[in-house]
Image (cartoon, rainbow, N blue to C red; front, side):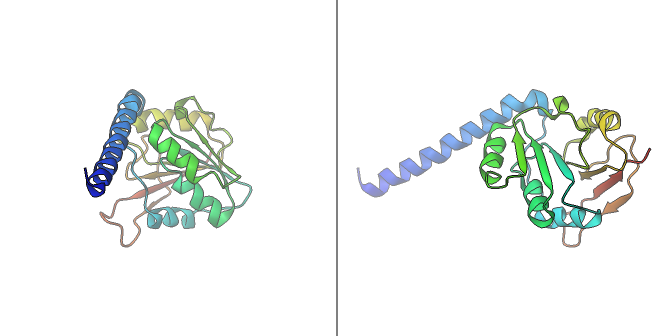
Length: 184
């Protein structure tokens, strides 16, 4: 067997194995995620909502279903904000752990965010399906402190009234970003 053919099979086999691991991690997380998949938020959209709220170094941003931790990294890099990310997709969790490893104020946890305490969060970010948002709405209402911000990409949070709806220019589908401010 030629070296080129051997390299082709090694690369192809490795890519196939990675794809199988990804599919298995999605299947394992499916009962908890209710079908929500790991989808990265674009930098343009992250910058749009980070620019729309007042941010200080002493704040905590929490990302519900943090994917690769991109939102947390950008908030930390631009504003020095500490962050906690919750992720139940094993592949996304491992990617976030690796990419956030050099950020001392970012903590990525492999747990279902329904079990997390959000009472210390100053900002909560979510990019979740509408059916999940019904449960998230109840959790946010019962746990968030006065003055906290909630940002939701694409989907409204039931029983919440957005303070702003952002539509960043150049966004692929002009999808909304809902910004909520908790006021008692």
